[in-house]
Amino acid sequence: MKPKAVVVLGDSYSNGDGVSWTTQAPRIMGEEWFAESESLLHKIAWYRINKPSHPLTDMMEQQQTRFMTDWHDHMARSNWNHKEYTEVNGNWSSVLSEQSGWPVVNIALPGGSTQSMTESLLIWVDKNPVFIAEHDICVMANFSKVDRTSITARREDHDYTRKQVSDIYANNTVHYSPGCDDRMDPYLVHLADIGACEWEHCSNLLLIKTICDNASMSMVWCGPIDEVSINHANKGNRLSYIDGIKDSNFLGLSLPIDRNLTNICSELCNISLYTMWVNSNNIKDNGFNPYSLCGHFNAPAQKTMGTQLNQLIQGNKDWFFNYKCLIN
Image 1 (cartoon, rainbow, N blue to C red):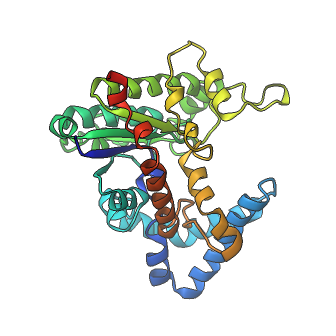
Image 2 (image 1 turned 90 degrees about the vertical axis):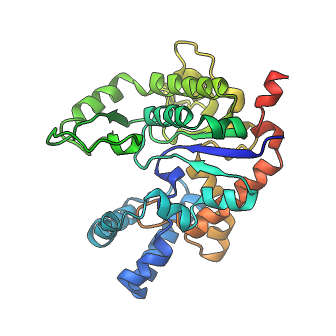
């Protein structure tokens, strides 16, 4: 029997951004500033759990001001979202690896798009045939924001000079979100206006499933965080999560709905909500703050999430690692 392994696709939430917060913030900014920030972040988390309809505008503005004024530059200089840093400092996928005893290959990209998830998997599969042949692999695709796009090229995106040659996908790829680039914003607005995210999500979901099938790997998925269907609130009736995915599939692709993680855990419709859910009692009862100031989850919250996810997988191995079942 082959040893098991997990491959993770996604964006910054899957990468484990935010693990630096609890150790680096008090060291750099001081205990008083850190305590004030922790109190604010816990308040935001508490309202999201207990009173989700409560307006958070004022608190979110305070968070954004603290982040941009005091914390953003430290993050940018220190590169705390680098894969090696997040894995060494306890991101959820490293917790999953430690507790399961399996290799967990995290190829998520901060700021990554739906498209970049497919492309990063394609390249990883192409470059790792021996590892794939030697392991029983489950690919976990965590879709996130649907309004992003990614461009891979050999020239810099601002001055158009040639980049230093690299065979690493992330080094050659730029991710664009609304509001981040004056040249790309009109294009991203246009995509949103015509509902291009529907096809983008459905086609890439099927492409990821096809890549996994061709490489004899199992595949599960969750997300995205955003609504996909342009009819999600049609006539005031909000579609359920899965019905929204189905409604967005206007070309009738054979989507792997049976591999969606809500089939095994109803709270796992996306990785962010799942992390909040597994930490919810601690937030409500013990004043626990799950966030970093950047809006991602801190190391303690990710540890709980990785622990709970491992228990979920261990209790449902045949569902997660189902490829052999399909060919028997």
